[in-house]
Length: 123
Image 1: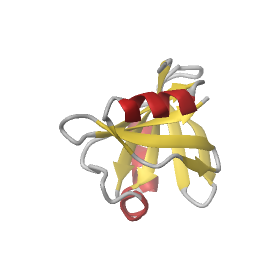
Image 2: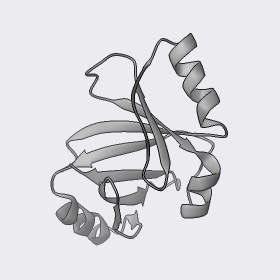
Image 3: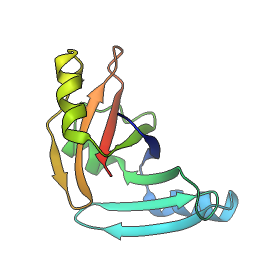
């Protein structure tokens, strides 16, 4: 029921510095720079790329979800059957977080057997 890898969430100490690095040195494009209560800068190697990188403020994410490993990027998957997938993973005894409604949609986290956390967003 996971249909696509949508984003790689990169947790950074300084979003503006990271944005400058990725755009000026690596040639990425800024797709969006939004602040809906939590700033997220979406960058992409090309216009129309299926997978993007989102630069998140590490300290903000740590306060929101202290269980996340913020030393490595996290993957954000997309699913059009989010509720069904949520229930399926719970039934398989996968560690899942609460279903949360964010300004950009419904999302939940899940962990693999090594406690690496990932997220799934309703698309």
